[in-house]
Length: 197
Image 1 (cartoon, helix red, strand yellow):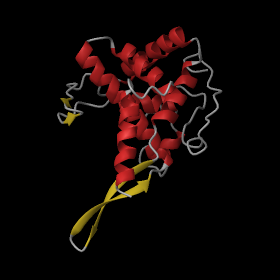
Image 2 (cartoon, rainbow, N blue to C red):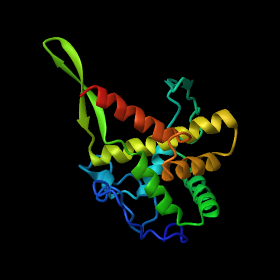
Image 3 (cartoon, rainbow, N blue to C red):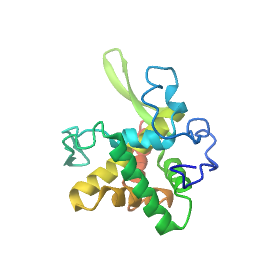
Image 4 (tube, rainbow, N blue to C red):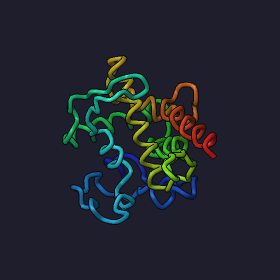
């Protein structure tokens, strides 16, 4: 049981993500034991990976036309971030009347891009080439875009971050392409990759 409340017995429908979404019953804080180990991320609970993404700092760079500066408010504050995730999961359960862990897994499956581009240099000329994305990177990109959407919406609307995180997870789980930032980014990545084939 996650946080002693929600069942982690969730089926991952996307077969390529089945091995990299960890849903073991562990408290979501490994103290970085997986760091610097080959394929160590796949042994980290998906809730902890979401928490690690939420602890990102402001890049100071433009993302979708907006500069993200969180001023490090969540950097290193794992228990604060876990509390935000707990409240977001409560919000999802209240709105959807379903297991919020299952809703999160569906959101990751829908927001994970299958193709991306890479730059290849041949005879001094750079080309963009479409490539398949590994399963671990698919999950990372999906989590990053879900968290990025919640940070952007939190700063623009001043709503509590757990509410906007719950909104983005629900929209991604419902495959709502018009309102979900994570799904828009996935679509953009795949369209660019398709044009680079």
